[in-house]
Image 1 (cartoon, rainbow, N blue to C red):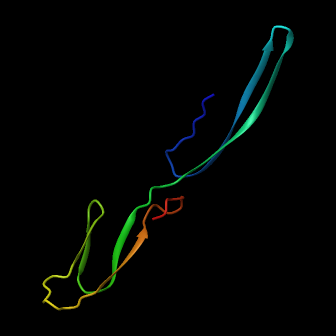
Image 2: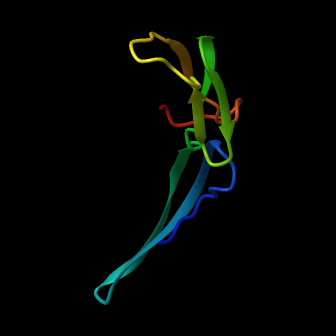
Image 3: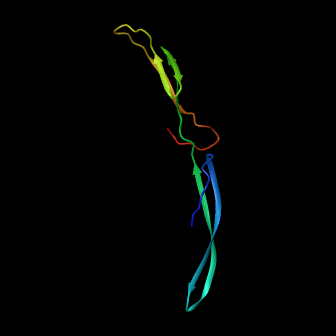
Length: 100
């Protein structure tokens, strides 16, 4: 038996399939039957890491491919600069997704 469920869209999916059975023996009458099998899947979106600058010094930007830059520019030796970043999962909302 082969069963397939679509993985095209994230979310929960439930279906059922009917399995037909038949038992044969040359010395006995054939016996047939069926059973219903419940199928369920939960397909998650892949987690998508994202960062943003919450506060502090520097210039923060994101370029393609999940590449982030926090540029403090020129800093004197012994200087003290702080940049605070926040991270979150920006996978599409409304459907289940992996966690970071």
